[in-house]
Amino acid sequence: MRALWECDTLQISVTSACVLECANCTHLVGHARRPHMMTLDYFKKVVDSLEGFPRMIGIIGGEPLLVPWAEEGFRYLRSKFPKEQLGLWSVFPKGEKYVRLREVICETFDNILLNNHSVPTIMHAPMLVAAGEFYETQEDLEAAAWSCWVQNHWSPSVTAKGGFFCEVAGELDHLFEGAGGWDLKPGWWKKTPLDFTEQVRRSCSKCGGCLPLERRSSQDNRCDISEGNFKLLQGKSKKVDHGQVVVHKKGEFKFDQKMVDPKTGSSKYPDQSPYKDEMYRKGIAAQYGISLVMNERGYWRPVLSEHMPVVQPSMFNIINNQFGMGA
Image (tube, rainbow, N blue to C red; front, side):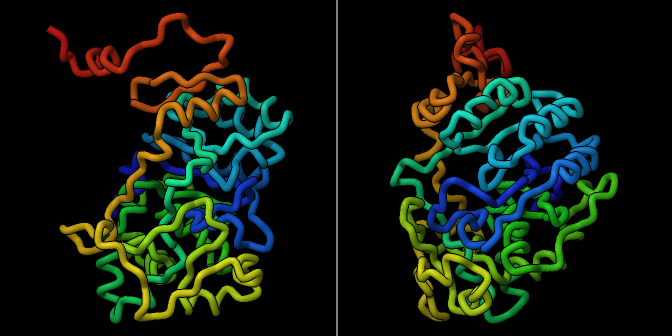
């Protein structure tokens, strides 16, 4: 695991509401009977608490553009941090009221990651197939959690209930009506793995991120869930109560040997290429009249299409300028 400030990005999960309900969504969209949503005042508190944070600050959901205060919140965020430090993860939902946000999006964020899950080869790991129902001891569970690709490759997060060492842990806390995250005191983001123990024990036992389980196409309308989690979520999860789940009993978990990390025995980082395709992402952006330009960090910068430069920097020139590879 990594200290919070060592992660590439810290995500502010402003809502679990979304226009999609993908199978095995890592943010558990579609399960909660009432999606969580930050207020603008709380969002400003979160932003203020991140003063001095050295890495990227991301805005994510669910679908972050669904919050009614998106424009005002984005402008507040931009007033506190440089554009180059800010990122947006979005579906780009259809509808004129969302398209109208195109200008503030381009003014606020230098890094944008778009994914509307319209590609059937996008696969999601079954986060609700609980590792705690597989491992016999707490020591084995925590060893696997320590190597989990989610915290080691993705992000810590802040939800309306506080700060979390892992973005999935934050969503699990909402769905299972947990005790909440860390208070957002100044410098809270300086926490290291030594501070994670209590959250790891609460969250990782209910999560399948560290297990090399078979994944499911995000376009499926069902989620995978272990028997114990199924029982715990009856009456709390719409998908459980509506029969939109596939229940896996202890001892019958379906593993994918291609997902086994040979160094740790836990799950390795899944293939991300299907939704990182350049034309896929540019096609989503075009629906808002936005073009994407590769920035110096290797992320996509949103630019209003009417403001696009005539000549775009090539990947070769970006690498050459950064690393001095030219003769």
